Amino acid sequence: MVLVTNVSRGTVVAHQCVLGVSFGWRLRGLMFRRGFGPFDGLWLAPTAEIHMFWVRFPIDLVWLDAELRVVDVTPAIAPWRVKTCRGAASVLELPVGTLANSRTQAGDQLVFGALPA
Image 1 (spheres, rainbow, N blue to C red):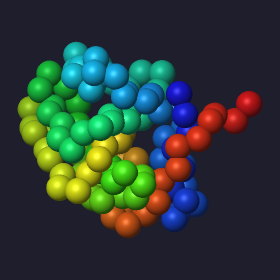
Image 2: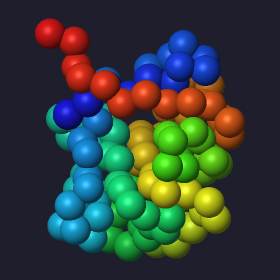
Image 3: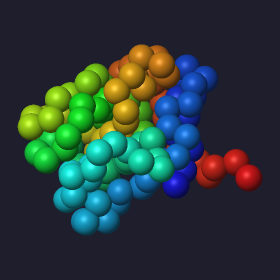
């Protein structure tokens, strides 16, 4: 798990983000879960599309380009939806309210780093 920081705003986006770069993580994601659990972010890469089938709760999305710059944000996407983002290389799935709390918006730069010891 890694810490995700919005360096443009000086805010933390996710304290414990899972890097979902394997095929299994990208395929299953948050399906059948009741919430985020022990982590508060899931980064799916590479992808420019997500589905919310069998996801039981709404989530915030941060769409990122290859340099981890925010291309777009989607607040509170509801279950049973599909979303794509032109120009995105990956997506960060977050609990609802994270976008507002971290003030993350298009154009911001994110950094994925090691958790502090």
